[in-house]
Each structure stands twice: as structure tokens, then as C-alpha cells.
Length: 194
Image: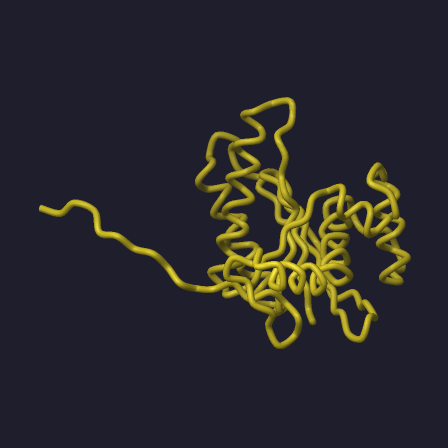
């Protein structure tokens, strides 16, 4: 199974692609998508860069599923709203390309990769390097994204099966490769017309 991990950010979004087969992990690619070259007030343009960038990553590496970090409210509510919009653009790009999306908190990723939820960025980088047998440290955003892919490789199948067994799946089915498949049923109701 090929997994795309995404560490959302409005300025810099990290991505990491990992193959998992028979419990073995293999590094495929990682990097960042940056909007720093755009005016910070040009939100629609920045969101388009993120959407197009992830769509390009999906087309190039053909992942089976994706894992995205869940965003929590931080000290600055405006920053949280902007980050949420960036995350929404990224998830929309994934589902537009028919990818199932799993979500994990930073705490879950840190526990899966480093063994404890208070791991520092440098510890995540080092553990990702070790787990994927990389020759050098990945950048912090790419390391977090690779960590999310690793987390999904370890936990994704079990979590999807538990959700389906408990009736908590809400339209989630297990695909051929163990990735959750989300129901594509849409609900449309016409608004007013003249």
C-alpha cells in the first residue's frame, strides 16, 4: 500500500510518500509545497497553490490513501482559521483524486514514531530517518508528513476495521489494500430558482 502523509501549513505544507508491504516500510519521496512567494493577503491564490501542489504529488506518486494531521485550536484563533482553510484545500484535493483520507493528531503521530507524545521536531526527524533508513535527516515539515504516513501504515488498517466493526465507520469500507474507502454518496437539494 502506498501512503501519502501530509503535514498541513498555509506557508509550508510537508508531504511524504511511503510504501508499506508485509509490515515493511520503504521511503518513496518527500518534500514541501510553499506559498511563501505569494502575498500573505492573497488567501485564494495560496489555497490554489496548495490544492494544485497536492494534486500534482498525487498524480506523480499514485498513492492508495492519505493521512493528514488534525489541526487543533492554538493561541491565535485567526491562525487556526487560516490553517483550517489550508487543510480543507488539501483534503479537497485528495478526495477530488478519489483518495481515502485518514486523520491523526500530532500526539498520535509522535507516539507512533517516537514512542511518546512529547517528542520534539528533531526527535521525529531522527526516528523517521531510522525507520525509513534514510541517509540524511528530512526537513521538519517533510519529517512530520512521513511520520503521518508511518502512523497510518501501523494503525490505519486496525482503526478502519474497528470503526467498521463498531458501526462507527459512517460510510467507511475497507478497500482491497486495507485502506479505508469512503462512500461517494452525495446529498443534493435544490435551492430557490426563479
